[in-house]
Amino acid sequence: MRTRPLAEVSARDLRPLLDEESEHWAAELLWDYTDVSLAVASGLERRALTGFVMQDGPRCLAYCYYMLDAGRAIVGSLFAATGYRGQDLEESLLDAVLAEAQAHPNNDRVECQTLFSTASHADGRFARAGFMSRVRHYLVRPLQSALSVPEHRWKLRPLRREDLAPAAGVIHASHRGSLDAALNLTYATPGYCRGFVETLVLRAGCGRFDPDASFLAEGPSGPAGVILSSHLSRTNGHICQVSVAPEAQGRGLGEVLMTSALSAFRKEGLSTASLSVTYDNRRAYRLYERLGFRLRKEFAAHAWVRPPARIELPA
Figure 1 (cartoon, helix red, strand yellow):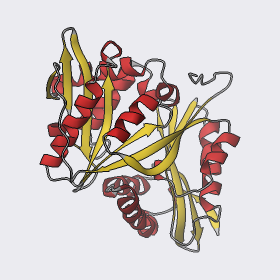
Figure 2 (cartoon, rainbow, N blue to C red):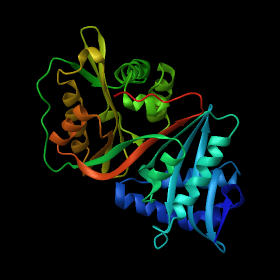
Figure 3 (tube, one colour):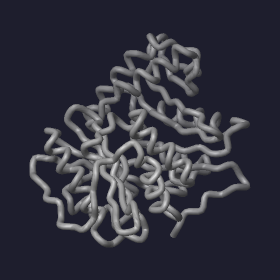
């Protein structure tokens, strides 16, 4: 076996592994990974993908890649073929990817969420490389049973294109000083949040955006909450983001937004709904459990910044 840069491998060489990966995440996460696989293949064809692959002769057994984004590296999929997991292949590739990303002269931050990872011991590799980490859970709820939306005084309406900036403002305000904001630069500034919302809504950044299950809630003083939803497959709806402005928290708006989206999913004929949440976010976690969500996969969020900068995690 040998480890090679992904830039030296053709899309044709990697295609069998990408096809197996798509089937794997469809079964494990109810997530149609086809578009991501196509993007990876396109990056290989353009010699633009950064990462490493483990090969046995011409056969690709495992791969890992990362993307550069304005001084930040985001580690993507870490996947090994059936029969080759648990042999330290993924961990070896991860070591190489993290070392390269941390050494990149124009990169001062590295982030990864290991949802798309088949490595059983990846978390230890992040810790050894100086990352700060927290456990996250991928939760799934069947949609056979109906959920009623609680009575409320909020004004809910479908999210419109002109709502992207207000929605980003609510998301940023709700994450100020949070654990998620410390580990994910997405929530750090209004600008980053605006880019995140535009990616979800306009560029299918997390499945196909679902306007019928995405809402903006308005209160007496303006936007108070937002929920952004998508379809990860033909049968699974996903809650990409739900946020309530600080002044509206603790008044049941999160439940109103969630049940509104889940009811919309059910009307669309979807079978399941999914979301991910930081385990230490206990208030949100209790709500999701009460609404019928259950653990599908445990993973982690990891972040590193170049010293002497430090990531300060809230207590």
